[in-house]
Length: 399
Image (cartoon, rainbow, N blue to C red; front, side, top):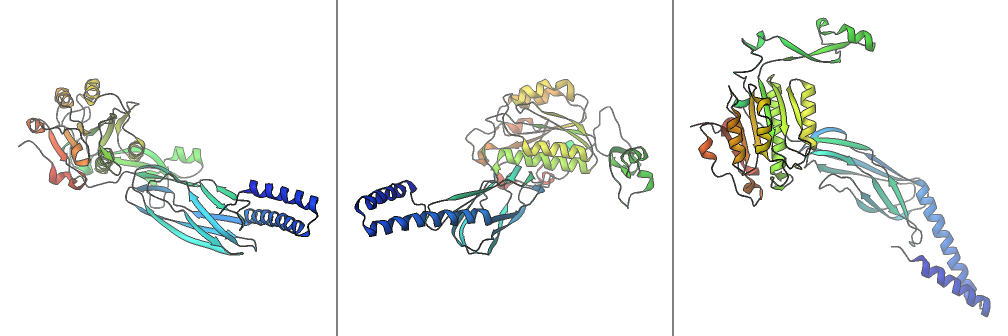
């Protein structure tokens, strides 16, 4: 509890004036007691702030939505004076996580505890900063100790099983035709990485090794699948619900899952979306492509103003004679379906992953006429957070 200092200082001044005028001994005694109280309180808080230490061990690196984590805290009092009240306030930007608490700490003691949580939302998050509020026992000189943020984590969308999707199969048309068994397809050297003892001598990239002064190996990717393009609808106002059970979060999870499935089978995958930057990531294979796409899926928001139909029409020539299209959207506007049919992507049936906004708490209508397009498109309809099943089981092909 913090006592107001201004009234006490005013009372101290009036008491001194009264003692000086009257010469009453009791008035002088009260005056000296108040002066001593101020001095002790100031020294107490000063010693506390100079000897209080906070240690925090936070996770770092890369995680997925749904992963559990834990932090370790230690507040150390290196002085001999006790601190009657300490309030720890955490300013981490991680949704749904608050490790703050209130406690007391004796002299020469350490208070330790473990705080546990779960990553419930994708994004880039920072643990901290932290504030420690404390002071003297009389609350005359409160102190604040601020500790800056130390570590950050990247939380990727959760990867779900999506099965064997039509649009991820090798393309029947395109600039590059791959024939024969997977083992017969020549490998594709996509990047250079650090040499590990299990690498063959044939994989060593001698030019890079000589330039960097350490052994470097070529990283190979087998070209098994054809190109696949994810068309992600990020128009503002289209998505429904709130994280983690929203159409936006599920769309990002599906994008990450399909990207993972495509790259694992050796296919090339790219991305086009109608966010505020109209982002385009060219189709490619390998670990670098995975990292690039996953970073986009982690940080992207539904902030675009270009309708999905306009986006499809603008990319007409870019997609012609390329791989399959995977359109992911909750939009009830039928114009984007007509634009998708007009693209005429040869050799592949486009896959539509439709997130029904009503199942995620939205008020906008559903795309009720999807049945009429089943003869031309493959459909995967997700009616809500509890309706997600592998696409190999739920794929709605033409029947």
